Length: 400
Ligand SMILES: Cc1cc2nc3c(=O)[nH]c(=O)nc-3n(C[C@H](O)[C@H](O)[C@H](O)COP(=O)(O)OP(=O)(O)OC[C@H]3O[C@@H](n4cnc5c(N)ncnc54)[C@H](O)[C@@H]3O)c2cc1C
Image (cartoon, rainbow, N blue to C red):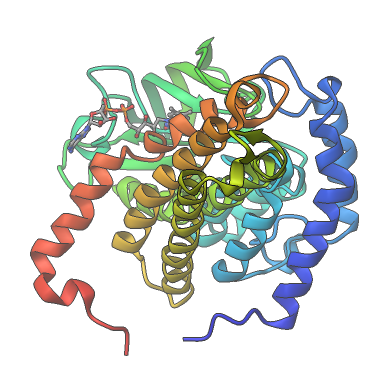
C-alpha cells in the first residue's frame, strides 16, 4: 500500500488548488455570481469554464482523445477533493453531478456511435445531461427493479415511453437524457436504459420541485412521458440491462460525490479555523477550550478515515472491481462526515456560522441531501450487511 501521489497527480492537485484559489473562490464572495437557485450563475460559469479548459483541468476522468484528462479513479479522488474546496469548483471543471456520472457511464458502456452522439457534446460542455430514474409513489424509489412503472413498449421499430419521473437533477435545460424504463415484467431483466434528446416530442417538464438546499443547474424536476419515441440504436447496452446500467452509473458517481464531500467538509473546517483562533471566551481563545479541540479533532479524524475508504473504493474501481460494498460504505460514511463537519463548524462559529455571511449555512442545507441522493443510507447499509452475511469473515479479507 503506497499512498504517495505520483508527480503527475500532485501536479494536477496543485494546479487545481491554484485555479480554485485564483478563479473560483473570489466568485463565492460576490452575490452577483449566484443564480436564483443559489448555484453559480451562467455568465461567470461560462467564463471560468473557458479558463478551466485552457488550464487542462477539464473533465478529468474522460479520455484525453475526447478532451478530458484520462485520470484513473484514485487520481480523480485527489483532484475532486481539491476542486470541491469551492462550492463552485466541480461544475467549473465539468466534474459535477449529474453530467460527471452520465459521462462516466456513457464512456464505459456506450458504443462508439453513441459516444460520438451523446457523450462528446457533454464532455465539450456544449450540452447538459440528466439521469432519469426515480418516480413518484407508487413507482420506483429505493428499489427500482421491483417498483418501476414507466414503460417503454416496442411499437414497430420504435420504443414508446409512457410514465412519470421526479427529482430529475438538471432536467430543466438538459439536452441529453438517460432514461431507465420498464421493458418487461422479468424481475431481473425487466428494465432497459435509453438516451433521448430534449428536442424530441412526447415528454415534458411538469414542474421544477423546490428543495431545501441549493440546486444543481436545471433543478430537480418532475417529468411526464406521453408517447416519447426512441429509436432502437438509442438503447444503452442491451434490452434488460437497465439495472446493470444503473449500477454501473451509480457506483462511480456515488464515489465522486464522496470525493467532493471530502473537499467541502475540509472547507467547512477551513472557514471556522480563524474564528476559533481569534474569538475569545472566558479568558481564552475558543481553540484553547478542550471541548472545542475535541470537536475539531473528531471532525479531522472523520475526514481522514473517510478519505481512506474513498481511496480504497477508488483503487478497487481502478482494478476493474465493481467495489459495491466499498462504495456503499463510503457513501454512508462520507454523507455523515460532511454533515458532521458543517454542523460542527456552524456550532463553533456561533451566530455567525448560522448567518448568510458565511457559506456554512449553504453547505448545511446542501449536506442534508447527502444521506438520500443516489441511495438512502439505510439502503447502502442493507447492501453491505448483505455482503457481510454472504461473505462472513471474508468480508474483511485482504486483497492479495
Ligand atoms: C437532491 C436530489 C437529487 C436527485 N437527483 C436524481 C436524479 O437526477 N435522477 C433520479 O432518478 N433520481 C434522483 N433523486 C432521487 C434519489 O435518487 C432518491 O431520493 C433515492 O434513490 C431514494 O429514493 P426515494 O426518495 O424514492 O426514497 P424511498 O424509496 O421512498 O425511501 C424513503 C426512505 O425509506 C427508507 N428506506 C427505503 N428503503 C429502505 C430499506 N431497504 N431499509 C431501510 N430503510 C429504507 C430510507 O430512509 C429512505 O430515505 C434525487 C434526489 C434528491 C434529494
